[in-house]
Image (cartoon, rainbow, N blue to C red; front, side, top):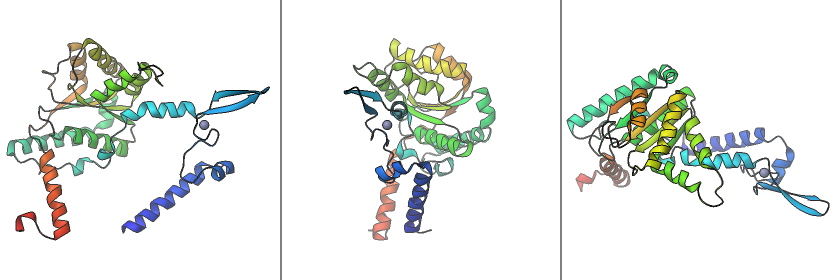
Length: 285
Ligand SMILES: [Zn+2]
């Protein structure tokens, strides 16, 4: 299918879903097509009513839903990772043979895990992907797993970077913060599957350890699957045993290559562009 046809099809689907979801005529007249602005309050989240000459502001029906959306946004899969899948995870970008082999083994283990996911889910078994090297592909792999789980098993997955989790919790202490610490923690505790990316990069204080303990322990108790990525093995992760033991018990540990492939991929993308634009390989000039 050529691009134009595909775009036409997408806009047709959008029109269909937007007209079927809003059967109130008022909605279609007052708001532009494709907009999800609330027709009752126009997106203000408050409605003004007059009572005996006095204007009163009351929260609109849409407010609770919008608050929920805002406070879970930090745990969305980043846009850049939306298209990643296990079968697009490339082994050939690892250049050192022993690291290539490690990547291959890691891929096989992930594939195995995805194949037996229902069983793993029942036992609350997740994964712990680790390697000391940044840019070794752990986050790409975790995102691929998240996408496969959503697509194949229809599981709800949240994706949060550990530093951002802490920042989000700290924001709840601000004056006038829209939501509370426990609401942020709940988002992470109750997610069907949680990807916690880059655990161990944060400076571990007692407070930080407490936040992660709440999340890890709550998911442990309710047997919920968590996928971790870390630059530390469970032996070197600077958290105490209440956290590491629970992770150890509920995660298959997967050793990732100690090779950064970020630059290799960037380099290849450049060569690909060059070839596309000039019809030559960069080596041929
Ligand atoms: Zn509203």
